[in-house]
Length: 398
View 1: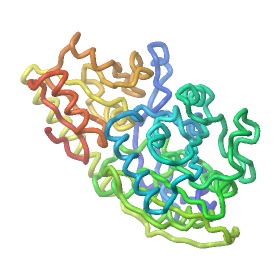
View 2: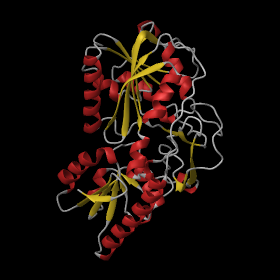
View 3: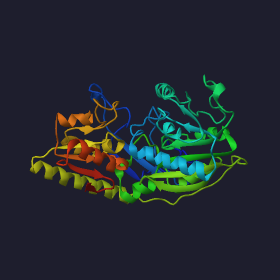
């Protein structure tokens, strides 16, 4: 793609950062046979010189309409959603209103919303996920906002149970996957009541740059929003940002309100050009510290596993010596177990595999869940296991 997905202007010819041998996907995880065809790719990061949005130039992954959550039921994320819902409903007096999650997966976060006095709905593109949500007793139908003028739920079997408009929309780490975020937001705008609101989260570009966490980059996230570019995107598509903050260390949260008098215009926005020196330095430091860690363990005859078949874990395994040195990668999500990390082909196992093949150290590659996972390791594997994590460009011991 050679045009900016926010302002539609042409993006520059020269990338601001390149990452070699990056995983081509965070969700199409190869099985034993698929390893033969799977390989890494070069990711090229650009910044639009007109509006400032940071984005990749590649095509989106084939499943960008689907919401696949491995950590949806974690204690960390459940508590975070509970706090967000409580604040939103109490602050803006939203009791009894109609809430719609756009891209709800299996309904993991809608299940938490059932604790509150609101009416709950969800739409999900992948049929299997929508069916699982319905089996859990949620009003979820299969759909994706493909056009600005579509009426949500019109062709679903649940149409008779749906309101004419929704009062609040929820979008959790979904916008960054979208090659046409304006289409999605305008469709949502058209399906909201006049005083409609929204709660939106996206990975924070500021966090990635501040920490030099190059391993946060992945093809699935086709755009990287800052506070400024997220606000620009919202205002260009009929929403006013009421609140914005960083949550869970690495995520931007925005509370928005529909602007009922909005009309598409020719707004011009600009965001300052960023420096990617921190990413280059982060790549250097992380690789250096990884080499030092692996050399230390090797000299002592100790073994290592990775916990987290996450995009961070996949990228670290593919772009450092970790993928060749670790014994295996642990993950609690059953649909990932028995497969292999993209690009590095490190085998992914269930936590129970530790008892078949014990290791001396575990490196946690899931920054937002490090403390929760560390607690699980201590409880299940014992206090003799050395626990390490990457939450910045540095490896730290927990």
